[in-house]
View 1: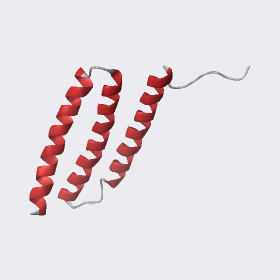
View 2: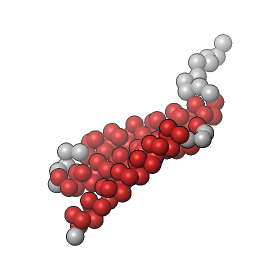
View 3: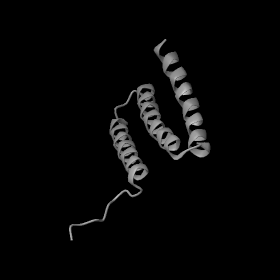
Length: 94
């Protein structure tokens, strides 16, 4: 029963990732694309976790952490870019 639920979850997450990829490509505004990229990162973490459960291994736990950290940093960088227009400010006290 648990295997069936996990496989259905894998299919649902894969379909939602296809919808999010469409939103990244055809998004009407840049913030919509940023939100879709963040959601892709979250779905990717869930997908790797489910694959790890199916394969009964702990080998993918570091990959899950890495994807989560990269998705967070990417979201922060995109939001800073949308707010200020630059990611790294070069203004120093003169």
